[in-house]
Image (cartoon, rainbow, N blue to C red; front, side, top):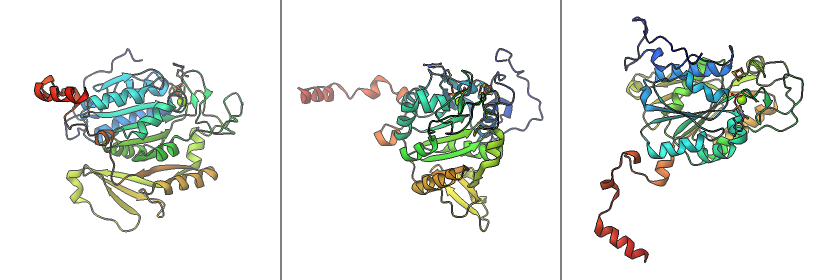
Length: 351
Ligand SMILES: Cc1ncc(C[n+]2csc(CCOP(=O)(O)OP(=O)(O)O)c2C)c(N)n1
Ligand code: SF4
Ligand SMILES: [Mg+2]
């Protein structure tokens, strides 16, 4: 229960990261989600990724909308900044916060209902603007919080718990993110921590719009046969294009190159993404190729997972509009006022 605080005492033998934090320092309140909900496994992956990446919790701003998925940030990073917005409005609030303070690490958490229905316009514009963030959708194909109605990501032909078949075409957020210019695009499955943790770690360090779609079964309303977002379906149809390891900049020189199915991708902050390729023909820098690959495998009923696209030269909204390096929120009157004389000239030029 959220009102039951977790004990603050840590066992002295718990492993610590480079900052001296234990995994417990990245946890939040006790989850109130259903036992077995995929969203809890994703929260655990976020905790592990932040621990591994040596992120200071107070440097993270976690924002969400409304839904079981959007409640999840309460259950991780208790020491971070948090904002639970109105349904579907996470992206615009995150964009504003990011513009005001570019020094924080932005993590937007949303659901398929939150992002693919009421918030679809918000999703679209935050991605096309290239906001520096990790935008993670916990995708279960239903509105879990309001008792299991089909969401816009439910596949045509998939069945609800009550046996109703969905006749609408699905919204594919991954294809949209690719088309809209996201510079890091990945898909994973809540039940595949080995794949998901490094993807989140890499996305948090990516200097641009990073989008992650995570299939996250709703055990209460979408985990039956006939559903294409159930644990069994995701396991049976998972087609992983690659596995990634992430190597911090400081350790990059120790990297040993393995022959064959390995590709290294250096991010602009110096961190190295090491792709252990399952499919040798898959190129993570080919945006159009990724779309074609996804469509081809989707037609075969396969769910492609892994790092699907990463730009070699990512840019973000701040670089597009030329803001100063210092966060706008820290600027004082004196920094903003050009001086009386210059101001008089500007005013005269506008008369
Ligand atoms: C403006 C508004 N409209 C509708 C709702 C009702 N509502 C709450 S959560 C939700 C859908 C949540 O679905 P999703 O984002 O997929 O999250 P999940 O619970 O499946 O994780 C809806 C329609 C609301 N809270 N606010
Ligand atoms: S209703 Fe579904 S999405 Fe919500 S907590 Fe339960 S299992 Fe998770
Ligand atoms: Mg949902």
